[in-house]
Image (cartoon, rainbow, N blue to C red; front, side, top):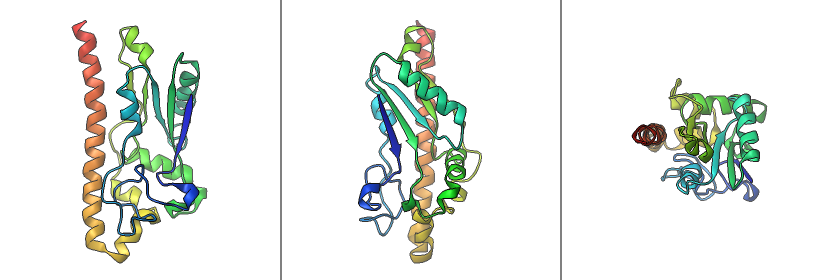
Length: 191
């Protein structure tokens, strides 16, 4: 069982960029904002088909968080729970960390999911989308964090380009999760 506290930077190095750092975020070795999208550990793990996988954000939905942790613990096999975690490197007062988690989910930036292979064996869809599509603009979420808003002051044109790319990333990311969910539904209908 593995619980990943995803701060989206190498926190133990003082905020160094990593493959988990999202596009547009300023971090050590990404002073002009990270140019590439974030690697999705959950999608990678789901491709194995026999791993319980969840993405959680306690500040957005504590019941989903508890359910995912209980399901992961009960799963007879490897389980990976990825928890959206706030960090001082995000550049805001951490008293607002749970509010930022909620904004990350509301903006579509952090989809909450549960992938339980046991459900497929029961003839059910193993991929549960526990959060819906975005209900707030990504810009509203990102402007609240220094790691994203810093560029708007130092390189506004670059910041706008990266924001546009990040919005496309979020939209495509959500579509991919939706697509996978519908694929599982179609597979179950064929059987």
